Length: 300
Image (cartoon, rainbow, N blue to C red; front, side):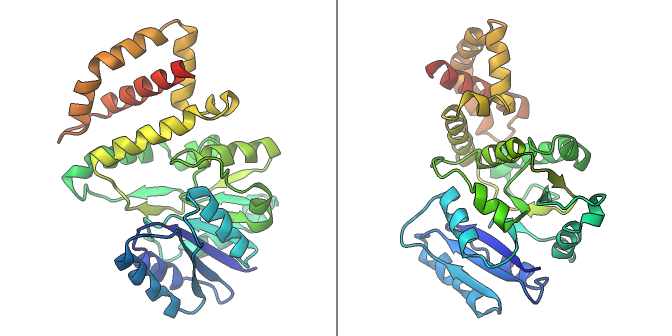
């Protein structure tokens, strides 16, 4: 079995991550870094260091492809039977990270069923690294506590994430990420729904990578709004599987959607003041997302 580790990057220094993964790489494995035309030349030069490592190479397209297309291109470049997709802003905390995945590809680990998709999960830093990233950090920590391994195994498709997952190459190339999604957000939702439609089991294990890419509050709020716009552009059948969209549909059924939009528009400046401040509250963040999406839903 040959393993291809695929890391798409855009203006992200991922040398430490690559060295961590390389130290565990099997003799027949490879690491391919997809630099999607990063404009920061200092980071480009830094990432170029990895070509000195055996079994490592960099793939650069002639133009910026976007989040979905660069990952699809990496899969086509790969030689391995298995593809391990890892986000560039991850950190390896386990010395057996790759071995854990390789062991999980054995049918004996799943009562004789040959797995084709395995998700390792996402972990977070033990402490808040900087005050300005508290909004994102608190959200991710709350999500990690809620999305236990047992919860992920109970809802395998809904909890599929592209941050850290292993997949059979032939299966991936028969699906690929949807390149029509140009803005940030919900590539994992669409991919998970397609796996469910095809009846492909998604197996979850405890093999987390730590998420390091924490944006400041303003950047994260803008990123959240982008993801909600992406969600609003999806088909209704796809949207209803996402929690915020499902909640908006229930509010519409209960004839409360108009009130929700009114309250959001009335309180939006106050909500933003809190979320961009030093002590953002996750309950207000949840309402902000619900209100923002309810306005988009009404416009469709």
